[in-house]
Length: 349
Image (cartoon, rainbow, N blue to C red; front, side):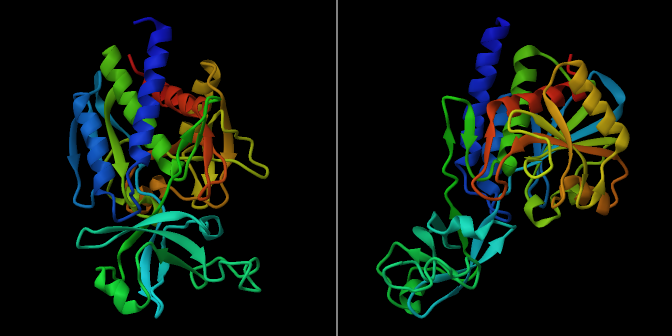
């Protein structure tokens, strides 16, 4: 296969995989379906997989040398909502799962999953949804106390909703609204972090197609509790860990959607200085578009792993994502740059 054909095939696999992952509702605690999809992709490529008790997917990749173990991780759990209570007139009050930017959800379509297996549709709305009726339609806060889900069923009371099987603790999953434009932009909710998960699975495809291996035995782990802070707490023990998560864009940060971002420090403190320097140098030496930034309001699976006691060096990279935890956007250039730097880090050959 020529290099041009390889690039076309890699891009096609990346986009297809990303759309498959984004097509599965998977807020934290409700991730079995997306993990099953990722597991199927890895197994089709010939890699051994296993699931942990908490639900993480571990994909083992043999290395060319022994003596060290390396880990790459991304997370497939997303933001979401959960039913908190049912109002007297049949609306669903909700609580956040993770940290969605609630004002951006006003008017979003959603699905309600009951524990008995039914799925209903609805819309997330302000409790003052009409400018023709409420004086405060434009000014009422968009928060948990002032937003609710309108169910697409003929309900008029709490009893009507309960008769459908809907109850507190049911998941409410809002639409990702995924679009890939002709100009290479990927617009979707939950690019944090399904974009990076798709990058890791595409790296597996690349190794399968080219017959290459990383230098050391490597665990590719897809975690399922990152958005609530403990996704990396039970990662496999490794000498070095590279988290692949979204890169931040905005204010005085330098990253764009067309680059891979290298995080020097986030809200939990600095990443391993030696790894940050090494990753930056690899990018510079091989012409990979990158930026090194500080993420002021951010935590990752690395922080969870360190707090749980993992003795390893660790760093964080990821494609630049605009409007994180809202209506996110990145570019295929940023995804390819992320894969290129991860491949250089693994020393594929």
